[in-house]
Length: 220
Image (cartoon, rainbow, N blue to C red):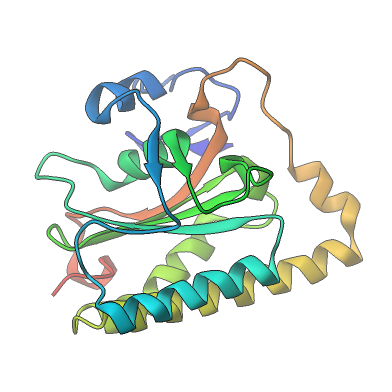
């Protein structure tokens, strides 16, 4: 199961569109574009990180890549505009992005995307279906919460490093559990049927831009 990026109702991963609200990847393409988007694992469109801060974030991302070579973590910062929904945008971007500095043997289905919109004071995490057995929305919310105190003070790089450190801890713990009981984790992962829209491929944990202050990770 996954959550619909629009109405946040639970739906089956193999659904071509949400049975509750009708959302599909075509709706996201209409809002943000249907072409492939070329990015790097750290794409700072909002200019949130100075030179030294960028190096810290890149080092943390590289550490994640070394620790967990079967997956990758990417960060995108930018203003999404007043009508944009960070949950839908993150879903769309992980489907459509081509990450120039990520090896070709790491598909987006094995990616974790962190999206930050400093203008609307919102952040979210989206991950591919191959991580269904490893991560859930509680995990991603915990990660975002670790960055909250730093982000409200404008220490974006420090908050992101804290987020990645917590994510590393979660992945390490789940990896150990998977080694002890691999059958249990294999049962949780069911690759989507070939040819079905990308809607089914993503599960995500997000904090919308308009939620209450205590639940919004970068609300000032």
